[in-house]
Length: 111
Image (cartoon, rainbow, N blue to C red):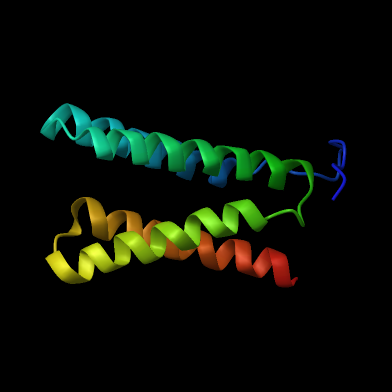
């Protein structure tokens, strides 16, 4: 796949970047509150991948594969954690945001 240079018809994926920041911040908060190094590593890794996906979607509105993969992965992981534990924070919140983002990117892929 070739990269499409930004143009006036491309729109920055602000929602994708906000989601990426929220995921990364969640990992930092898990580390600060509970000392969870895995939370920090996973949050920063997934947030970074999501930011890359949002950048790619900003440059080419049809290049949503990475963003879709990250949001679907988080939906599966955090959705499962929410169903097992029943706690809304943080698993339910991230699962809900991931559901919205997965649907958004799937729509963009199919449209």
